[in-house]
Length: 249
Image (tube, rainbow, N blue to C red; front, top):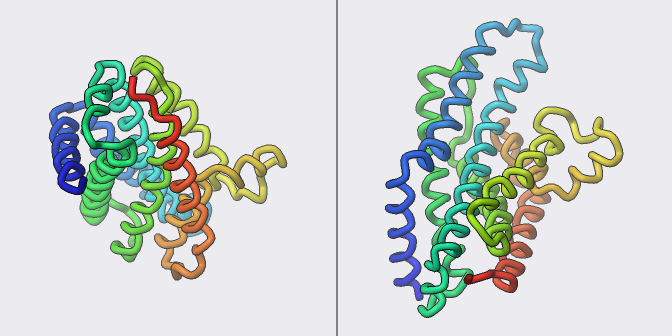
């Protein structure tokens, strides 16, 4: 089983890298957003622009990281739907591979790409980023990988039931992108209207943003155990549901 997992992971990684648009969306665009927005806004900030400085110093890196995770989700949803529509999943069903093995292979691929994108973002930031910051890179990478695993499990649940590739990415985008608005990235959750506040409590991105922003600022992990627990719960619930409702054809 482990040998099959690594073989499938290697195959999926090669397939992904052969598609230029997928690589651009997952790797290049988040890095460009990080650099271009930082360079456009950063030099214009004065010492009293506390809100803007907070966004550039914390919000922008977290936003870029969330875009990395969402790009991975949309890519995952599309790939699984294409495999189902093309009969590839039907053929995989005849092998010993189970849905959780396929999920694990795709998660490993996306985590590798996430780590690569984050590394490029940090390297580019050292050269172009206008704000002097000192981030615990290892801790933030772990936080991003935890967040990405949790968010990817939502994508796999979507991919498990979406029948065709034509609707896969739009449905994924409709589900994922609105979460950013209530995640606390642009406005404190406490200041949201009651309906949006209630939505923020159940949206996984809320906990991902809290974890990423906290670790980026230098908070101890003990201050974000609740965020980690919430993201882990989302991962296990979505993974369990995916295994039950996964459609091979």
